[in-house]
Image (cartoon, rainbow, N blue to C red; front, side):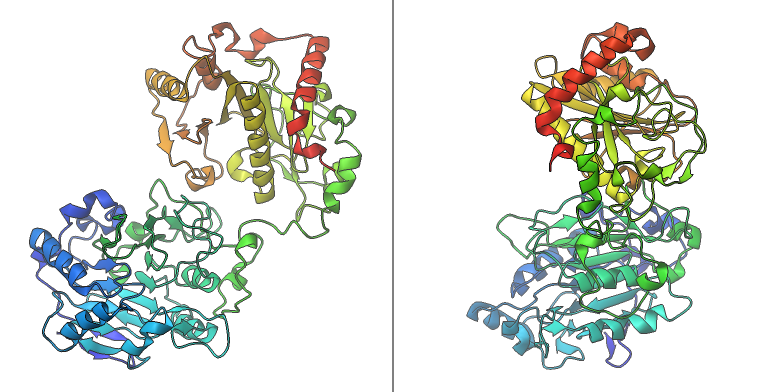
Amino acid sequence: MVAWSPDSRVVSRIQPPRSAMRPVSFISRQRSLTDEALRPSAAPMVAQSLPLTCGDVEGRLTAVFNRVRTIQKKSGQFDLLLCVGEFFGKTAEAEAEWQEYKTGAKKAPIHTCILGAASQETVKNFPSADGCELAENITYLGRRGVFTGASGLQIAYVSGREALQEPAPAHCFTPKDLSALVAPLVNNSKFRGVDILLTSQWPRGVWQYGNNPEVNTKFCGAASIASLADKLKPRYHFAAIEGAHYERLPYRNHMVLQENAQHVSRFIALASVNNPAKKKYLYAFNIVPMKSMDPSELVKQPQDVTENPYRRSGKDKTQRDRTGFDPAEEEPASQFFFDLSRGGRGGRGGGRGQGRKRPSDGDHPPWDGERRGQGGQGGPGDGDGQHHMQPRQPRRPPQPTGPCWFCLASPQVEKHLVVSIGTHCYLALAKGGLTPYHVLVLPIGHYQSVVELASEVVEEMEKYKAALHKFYKSRGERCVSFERNYRSQHLQLQVVPVPLDKCSTEDIKEAFMVQAQEQQMELMEIPEHTDLKQIAPPGTPYFYVELDTGEKLFYRIQKHFPLQFGREVLASEALLNVPTRADWKECKQTREEEEQCSAKLREAFQPYDFALED
């Protein structure tokens, strides 16, 4: 039986027998038990909770409860059913079905906690905004609040949708609602986060740094829910109403090397019950309450963890931790990138006119992935004002403490190899390339690896990759790019074209995997939309390959690594079949030959060179 306290929002219930608290075999394939900290072995003496979560029921009560009965017969009793999204339906049939439960003719097989109305049509089913029992075993949580189970599991919730007008409709929440929810929690010095957050709407921008959902992200989600999730740091966040199932990669709640490690968060969106596409609408998982976990277990980071999608670059922690919810506070477009509109496009304009039309007119570099090693780790610098970068960049690009072959302002550069110069990156012909159009994409400032790049540099590097992809495709070639962050001081992203008639993408992938195994290395395939920053903190040595399909292979370098590995694989008989070109030192050309090759490439690439616009 449930004891309901509307003032404190605390639910206390008798815990089921320990025999009912076990991993559920039927959902093992659903990644419900991915966190090692949630496994029974992590806390054998601590009570676990075993909840079920459901998406939009939309009045299909009998269907969802029959499904729950089937699951419980097979896997044992669950603690409770948490329903997000729209619980009630809008049809006469749905109303008649609800009356059977309301009158007691039918009974829910599990204690069910639901959120409030997500539309004006279903408001009539909720007699109070404060929460109440609607039928036996069916409890309306309320407009917003926190409830805590007897095991200590803490669940925060917000009903309805974000209010877009004042006064707010009955099915909407306001900034005041969110502030009232957050303030008592975050003002507690011992607050680390909540175990579970339930909302109907998705958080705006949750897909940033992660895998993409099958929804129109232009119109999906609420900015205030994103801010709420950032502040409450839920270990699990559930939402619905978009008609889609989406399990985002886990994201971290701290900045690596800048803040103490914290637990990760998982966002899971569920589809509607009995949807025609048979998308997942039920999710089961076992969880040890945060308050009962060993701190070292709680903060363990899974291998596929990503950056926090809600944190804004350049914002200090004080601002991030505010409890106020200004509707204009969350602007997803500026959450993850610097505001490049400051100073207008003019920051690029001067550079366009002086050093864009023919990059070789400037003072700029050489290239090959192995000619390196002169500089230190670098620090902030002024870039000598080249290409008028200052007005565009919110911070000055770093420069090396010593000579560097690849910094654009370095006197060591071989400027005749430069093909294109952007605002933050440039393109250069590879010295001793595998093919005539083998190029390097490099940052203008001194960055050691991709994971250390500022967001605006990443953005332009992606533009160069996309331009090269189109360029090579027009020539009947596919591109393969790779980076080796090992025994190098300046990032060089090598991009190599491979003729379509030479081999398939699968052949390339297999060649990398096989040759890695032969050298006792295990290349890991990572999700297509995963950013390297998500799996390799700054300072981590690694090797990384991206295929033309977006597939990515990653190896975390332990001790030793063959410096020419990427070239050796591509030069092999199975791919380009130019084994003698595996080492760039064996492919040297005279300066005159290099000038001819770079001029030819510069001219061929010109239609795809976005840096020549304006």
